[in-house]
Image 1 (cartoon, chains in turn yellow, brown, cyan):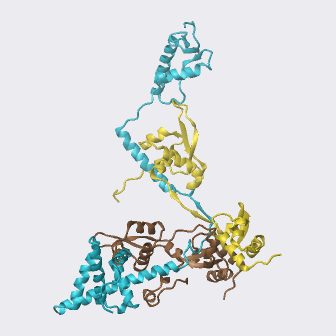
Image 2 (tube, one colour):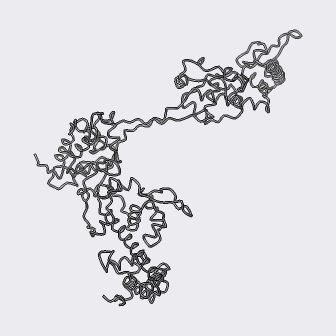
Length: 178
Length: 178
Length: 256
């Protein structure tokens, strides 16, 4: 067995740490003096990190440091970015919720303005609406309805939980006498 | 002195190791259990890496592993070096570091010569300086200051790590490192 | 030290020297350093004279000396007159203040120069020390979360409904009437699968709720039927007046 000098272990450690790609044993050997046994040096580095938060592994044709597998779940941080739906999408969703199933042109009719493909796709992507079959009218338009995700997101048991439009619109005028 | 559990040291080791940027003590603390003393854990990690090929240092508002400075000549053969800043850029950076926030014309006044666009862009591109708002004087000039990358790059904990100007004038600087 | 002496270097190297400086202040600092290590103790007057001597020498060789050198030279000439032969107390004070300001600028420039050297001597990330080459990212960004609440849904509905209603006042709803072309297309599509006699009503589009739309569809389908019969694509029959109209695919007589 060859002796391993601590300085060689330090060089190997630093080189593998700083390299942007796995370091092959061959190129590691070029950093070490001729008398050094590369495999023994690698084994010494491996031993030094054995059981630590970071370990030396062999992957992708070379050596690299990796955080220990049991660390990954503990280091994981999930950043939740909440998004708001754009106003147009919110209006469209509301119309679909109250009038489903209905076609795109019917949505446009209610909103009184054209509906962009982008808005429709945003709602689809968020799984808030889904196609509910075709209407047997000229052009056989696809009709849209809300999904179960929609219910979950708004905390609704079912669609009947939506406040009836009549209640909303029949807001008594303010400023009456006492 | 608090007890430091080896498991905490492993987590800290892994967290700092995984990140390319400095990890603040605060975010490290969030990874550790409540009863752990972050500073003691950091000290334990520091001790473990003391004198190794990779060491733990404090820079740019956080902790970061770096190869030991004495490794550089040997690592240069395998690691891609970043470009050194030209002397003019270094001087401009030093002016900004000492006198921030200051405007371009103030930089020019101190150097006694015009500041080239090239120099300004080189510093910006290297993320060493950044705009720090406008000065409420005629022309509302943009003022400049150093970034956290500046601290990280030169291994400074914060701007107070810069030597006081008077100290510099007293001792002629030596080429050696600190 | 004789402050008035011309620089002893030959002209060529004098030119090179000027080119080597970043600007007049740079040259002044260099001259000051030669005087004293401690910038607080330099003699501004002798500094001024040395500078003017260098500029004078350079001007003799090269007339196109840069403007900032000449501006500095002019200012230093003014300063020299205030320091050497002040006409009165005021001028003497002006000279002292200006000399002080110049000394400060030189000190400031010297400081940042030294700081640049100090920074350059530090183990610099990416040049002398290296960070982890293959960082791992354990951060997950979850963009799936939508902020949704029933209140804004209802508010959005009201807004849309209000605008939609307002719009109706100006743009009455256009009836989507079943045209003859629509009916021709539908008959073509359906006749292939209906070789037997079938009632005209069966060829109407589905979901016709509006009576006006339904009447229009009946009329269009009848017209379409007549057209297709003329073309020989189908046959039509009506067994009695006001009786049901029936259609069947294929031609009764094969012309063409």
